Length: 267
Image (cartoon, helix red, strand yellow):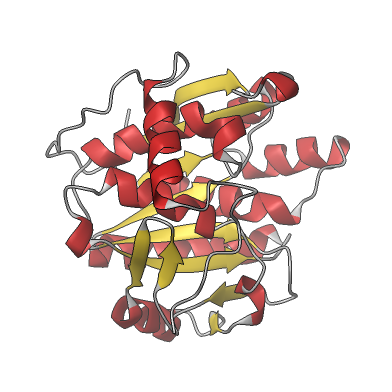
């Protein structure tokens, strides 16, 4: 039995028609890319950061990120990194079944997921971390929309991270960077960037400085792990973050909230 969605309607609409319309409206929003048109280019962009928030709040900003995903060279699979809010498992995946969204099922790449477990035995295939967790799931409708020209080929590997130890995160980044390069994998991570200071630390590639800043701001450090992992992978590949979009919430009730989509590139 497929994993059923748990994040709707809080993070996205719960019917095909409403969800498809809300994503299209995010692309066409005045704060969004303004168009639904995207053509595949022979550009291998492999590392993306997008908001971890509802379509209502962060839809236009997220659309900017997935416009770049849609235009990049199509990978063998996507590795979707998320936070783990619901268990103590440090590194968790869910390969038991495909994942449902209102747009249809998204196929789990079980073969590569199990191969990743062989490369990184700390990664556990289990249920508990994903039964109530939204962080990976809310990216799937966007991936489905961005890959609508390749929908039959779309697969992904879910991976939630629950550690505050930078040494552990750097080791994970080393494994994921090598594994992704060897297997033609694009990595999508989510985090709500919040402010320009965070963007500066992301662009500089300084995980230590970012951790110190977030500690001073008394932020939830566990939620930072997917972002830190992405930064460390980018550092290993000599890539820097390029801000695609940085904007306030699209919701009139949340104008003080900020979000960003970032593509990590060679400069």
